[in-house]
Amino acid sequence: MRCRRCDSKAVINMRQHKLSLCAEHFIAWFQDHVARTIERHHMFSKDDRLLLAVSGGKDSLVLWDILIHLGYNTDGLYINLGINEEISYSDQSAEKCFRYAEKNHLFLHQVNIPQKYGLSIPDAAKKSYRSKNRTCALCGLTKRHVFNEIATKYQYDVLLTGHNLDDEASVLFGNTVNWLGKYLARQSPVLEASSSGFTKKAKPLCRAYERETTAYAIIKGISYFEQECPFAAGATTLSNKVLLNDIEAETPGFKQRFYLSFLKAKEEGLFDPSLSDRNTDFQPCSRCGQPTSNPEVCNFCRTWENILVSRDS
Ligand code: SF4
Ligand SMILES: [Zn+2]
Ligand SMILES: [Zn+2]
Image 1 (cartoon, rainbow, N blue to C red):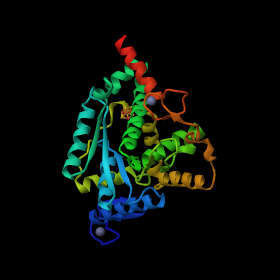
Image 2: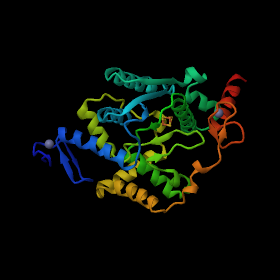
Image 3: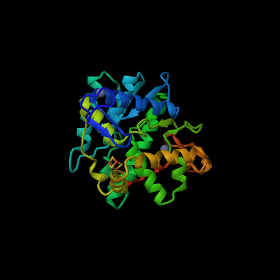
Image 4: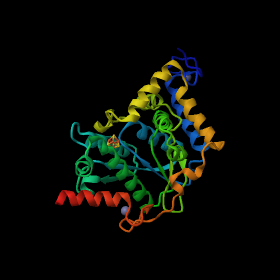
């Protein structure tokens, strides 16, 4: 297998793009691929201050590497969830983020949930919800709150996440199977800032296969935490990924077509944008000041208040 650009030995064959490349040309191609995604979806410019949510996994660290290479002004945000039960997931992923930031002289915000709120996510979920898989519901609620809090407090223009094409196709599949119109209307590479206090959000890896981000991390020697969060086991998005990988193996390019056709259909007006929950009326939460569609107290504050009452009773 030869590199399409220079005819030396290829290190990756991307059947979905009908393209095989050597290490040097793959890195250049992938950086350019992400740069084109940023431009294509009008995500941000070199004048914007960007805040990237990093988890210690490959996708967010690869994205940070590419953004710095492309000359974007990007700080990181690591949220320590206190998930250290079966494996020391949070401690080890924190270590990867700190190391990467230190090595590359980058600024990393850190928010430690057990220190800030008094309980780790798994312990808080035990007080809040009965079943184990609801840990992810509390985790998602908490992460969304902290992301928006830090982005607003430090006046970042855009909040970025490392979701890749496999993530997006898997979520799209789940939303389509269940015909969740509100979520389909909302799923997008970019969510514009709203007047009600949400920071603009973007996913610059949304057109990148997970296999490509892995190859980038390995070739560039980026040290990342390889294990999944223990609570991810059994999640529907993971089983959707397995299913989509099987189809992709039979039909190269399937995931890309599925996701990009969805974006095209949205551009052509398949979904009424008013279905998106961003069009709901929001007002500031009386506790934390973040936007909420609840009458007075946001879901985050109400949930954590109940958890702490239950812990202390
Ligand atoms: S798998 Fe669940 S608990 Fe683990 S990081 Fe993701 S949302 Fe949080
Ligand atoms: Zn080459
Ligand atoms: Zn609140």
